[in-house]
Length: 185
Image (tube, rainbow, N blue to C red; front, side, top):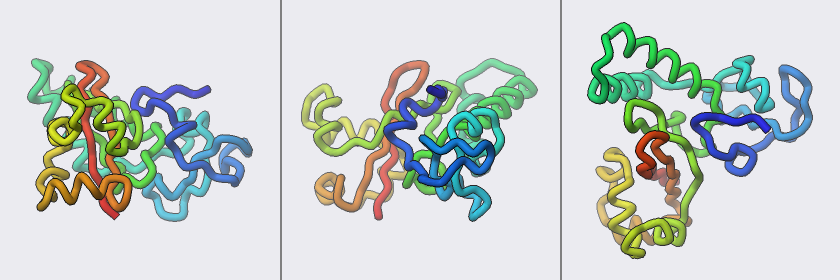
């Protein structure tokens, strides 16, 4: 099994293609190419070819800027060393399976690195992981600012999870803090 620093379980949480890998011909466990944000250039790729960089996931510039800003805030490294880390981490993320349905391959940053994707959570999973077992306060604590700023009515938002709203959860690889991105459809 191929392991990825930023993606806990691609076999469980990725969308798989029935087509053979267009790079090596592998027939099993291939990723659907549409989520790579590269148009029709990629239709199917196996995890091994992705890890080797035979094709990569598109990483928008704002994701790179988010990482660089976080590195600047959380390190005493030189500008040159920060740039080297940004290049290295972006390279690693671009060889990580994309999270299906997250628009623009958005990826949270914490403690000067990208977080690890751990899955999509419904209300029950949010409640189970909250300290107070209520869930709502916990969700507000882990939601990214962009998602929080789009919420007009939190109770409506809460009740819509699993219907038209999905909560994608990540975990910091350094401090273990949960981070969430909400997407509505």
